[in-house]
Amino acid sequence: MTTDYDAIVLGAGAAGMMCAATAGQRGKRVLLIDHNAQPGRKIVISGGGRCNFTNIGTAPDRFISANPHFARSALSRYTPQDFLSLVEAYGIAWHEKTLGQLFCDGSAMQVVDLLLAECSKGGVELALGQPTGAVEHGDGHFRVTTGARTYRAPALVVATGGPSIPKLGATGLAYELARAFGLKVVEPRPALVPLTLGSDEVLFRKLSGVSAPVVARTGKAEFAEAALFTHRGLSGPAILQISSYWRRGETVGIDFLPERARGWLREAKHASPRATLRSTLARSLPDRLAEALADQIALPGELANQRDTKLDEVAARLADWRFHPNGSEGFAKAEVTVGGISTAELSSQSFEARRVPGLYAIGEAVDVTGWLGGYNFQWAWASGWAAGQSL
Image (cartoon, rainbow, N blue to C red; front, top):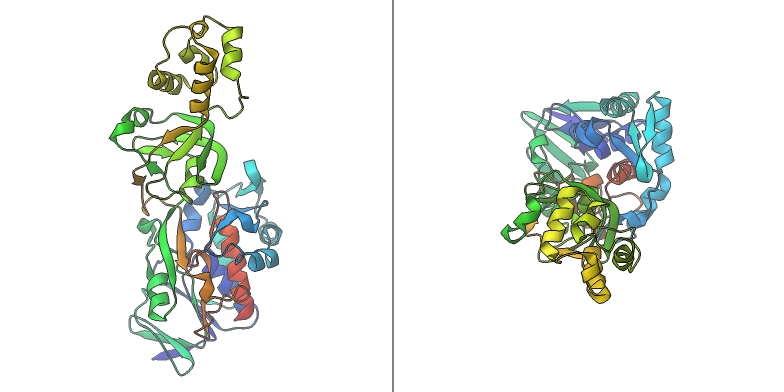
């Protein structure tokens, strides 16, 4: 038995639900399919269960892509204020945390319920708990089989995300479909993920649970937020941010005292000549971290005994302490995926594949990845809305 629709959307996540709701409210007959029985599973766990649903600082330069200009069109046409207006229309209380991050006061389920209500307004039909089988294309139609059912539509939207957090059901289906239709895929890798340290840096792994505000750098990217030491290596917002830019073999530089001006350790010597490096660091850093750094530097005795040039060398090392991660915690712990379906294959206006009319790709499935802090949800809303307007 085959049922006809105007559009089939694969993936009931943030982007898929937004796309289906937008198209449905434009009068399209839309089917939304997901192999999970529960829609929006990543939404539910995001932001500690409160969903960091957007960031008011959203701008194209806060997204990573082989084509840094691709995201500009969709982000300009569906803004954080647009989604915030929707949140407020549903009476969902929210608050702003640091750096423009907006969260629900209550539960992330409120955002899922909002999206389901928007789908209902558009008459979207749901096929949840239905693993996607064969996907075929011919005679101007796409055919999707789930179990004994076959669905047909002239438009197919791939919104199945990337492989990050597989325990929630994430797979590489988007890339399999893209390759089956001849679309290029930019190599996917884990992003917004903790980094691991090898045995030569085991001292720092022993600081598990210690955090401090730092500036973290890799390549040309740098972020001023907290870093957290774990039993496996480095985490915390600053590390998650740079992990999206980090490549295996590269170092990570940490400025442990980013507020300190050049020459600060000399000034500390003159102010407290009998202080040690450890006691001086402990005034600004957690005790265990101050001890570990002082032990590694091994500056003997009191500051008064040190030449100013030596103190400058120590200050410079503390401002750019080099770690050598041996990897990351992988897709299992990654919040999102860098890479995906190449933007060169898609229209930045409609998200339709240039070489396969009627095929669309949105959200995390596409090679556009945002910073930590609500940017990836804004990309989901913007790309889903843009595609929904074009179906």
